View 1: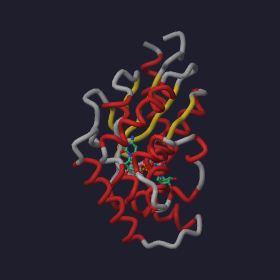
View 2: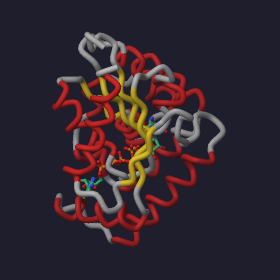
View 3: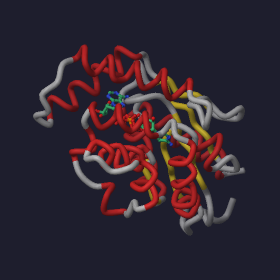
Length: 207
Ligand SMILES: Nc1ncnc2c1ncn2[C@@H]1O[C@H](COP(=O)(O)OP(=O)(O)OP(=O)(O)O)[C@@H](O)[C@H]1O
Ligand SMILES: Nc1ccn([C@@H]2O[C@H](COP(=O)(O)O)[C@@H](O)[C@H]2O)c(=O)n1
């Protein structure tokens, strides 16, 4: 393939599986733009916690709402996964994600339904998984490192509850696209996971 115009990499997977870390590194490697679509749902969830109606919040979302460590807490994550089960909220966020994917120069989007619903025509689809205890340990260490007061048990419960809700919802449930390549990061270093992903993308670009 001689151009990256409209080249889309869709990376889905359960909570804290490493998809954001991989996406950022891959975007930097290829010079693609990156959108962490979980931030859209987290931003809506954070507004709901402040008393705003979920659909109003989704419709009024602006890029500035997607910044800040305050969106990274387990409480906001839980609310994000509740609002993410509302079809109207999901529908309100589709155009923004598809416009991002279509931008010139290539794009990486990570989330839960990128390969199945948002960008079913993506040139590369990955499904990143890892053991739940490994994921919770990594996320707990990340949050502790940022000074966020939580416990491993609380983080594990957050990850497991969200996975169940995300897989069980009727609209755009978390699942791999039929043509997704699975990457299990349980016993991979970040460098190994990124290298595997770059190899998959490079192989597709060379076709
Ligand atoms: N292969 C790996 N080895 C060790 N730590 C990792 C690995 N991949 C990711 N991590 C760490 O695990 C944590 C979760 O990773 P990351 O934020 O990329 O997951 P995510 O799937 O994007 O999460 P979310 O569902 O919240 O969007 C981070 O602290 C990250 O540095
Ligand atoms: N494409 C997406 C992305 C995210 N969600 C929901 O948001 C929650 C938070 O996402 P993180 O990636 O930041 O963990 C997640 O649990 C999902 O409920 C989604 O539905 N679709």
